[in-house]
Image 1 (tube, rainbow, N blue to C red):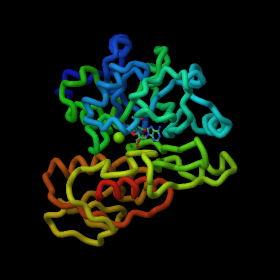
Image 2 (image 1 turned 180 degrees about the vertical axis):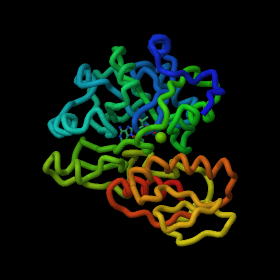
Image 3 (image 1 turned 45 degrees about the vertical axis):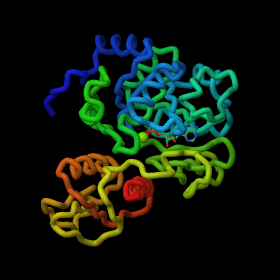
Image 4 (image 1 turned 135 degrees about the horizontal axis):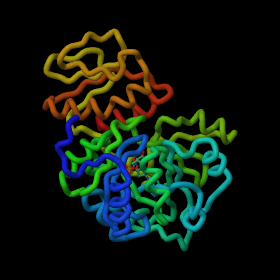
Length: 317
Ligand code: TXA
Ligand code: MG
């Protein structure tokens, strides 16, 4: 795609330097991660964190994920436990977020954690964001770079379109490898998946040698993203459909569906990883084409299909 945006930059020494300077001054930037693109600010700075909430129009009750380079400095902020260390060794850096107890003397801004006594932390694997994190002496609070409840961005152009020039620096790293958000895992009590992702319960359970629970309905705000309408193109959507009329966008999966103007195939070869990568791209396309209705076929509920179905359910809510 041609770069018509003056705030999208290829990653080089010069822009790295500028980005670091910017972040140190409590400004916010758009950054790539392996899951989706995020809006990043100094997690220790109230000013930076408030900017994130304000530009995203995010309710203050919904806490942010704090992103670290590695374990260094983590123990000042978070009560590290054994389950965490086991998972860290096998899965990090990577697309998984851990909810842990926040230390009383933690420097993480309480606005970022919505005044909870827990904090969600993640170690992204994208090399560009890792380079940035390695040069900072503070972690970054990074939600997905979309307005609250909307579709997560999977490339720099999505971010630029969402916020126009309100975000002065967006680092371009092509399309996100995974395309849906990280697995959110609660490690503060019984091991619970609060938001499914590409790393699934089976894998976590195998590493820990423990049962992993899946939180379906939540009474308290554990992961607000799991509560209400979210990840949504804001168009009426019906799931588990077998066909659709011409004026309805039809999201399908597998080779048995004929290619027509209103058909959007998540993966012709029935590959769930490919489907995850295409999901938000297709949501955006359908929105652009101004469809008023979306029908979706049944998606296999195994592997990353669980995460895809989770996002579809929220989008259809
Ligand atoms: O893949 C990702 O995780 C991306 C990239 C940019 O890292 N980030 C992302 O952030 O998806 P966000 O803010 O869009 O979603 C964070 C989720 C929300 O559902 C939030 O409620 C939950 O994590 N969360 C954050 N802190 C929490 C906490 N202390 N307890 C429970 N859930 C928490
Ligand atoms: Mg989000």
